Length: 203
Image (cartoon, rainbow, N blue to C red; front, side, top):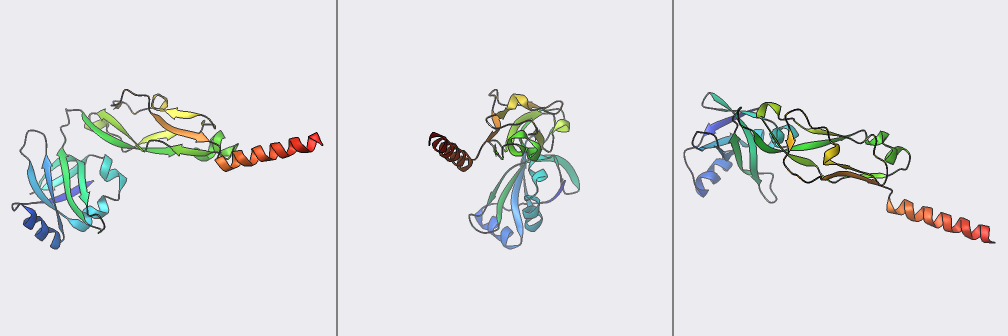
């Protein structure tokens, strides 16, 4: 994805407020061997880009003064109740250096899992993203979690995931990624039915 940025010379609260009134969002680009650079971006374009998952987990092409460099979105601040992006941070990416970032998890095949298909179970997504380390060229947009073999009472852990080539999880812990269980109301109803059946047999 491409991001168009403009140089920002004035700093401070007043300057940032004037930028926002003019429909722009202040930001910064840092990292690598170059000095940090203050930038401004079109607010509406940035606001809509932030709604896209790939904007948060992909290498972005940031164009500033006709020069394009690769960056990652590292942080952004939004207003407490207004639809307003207050500030955004980008980090430069070095093609030869491993980066550490979060990648979203995409859960697939839940409807064909034994938990859902046979037992009307509920699958809970315990993690929604994963901390990974990899070279920029190997950064995936997402990591797929296949739920097709998950049954009630079972879980999928980090060790069960097939990570893309060149991608490693940062954590050493075998995180729980997803679990499957029978809804509490269904268990209670089945217990009551069983108890009622037992009472009938006892008569």
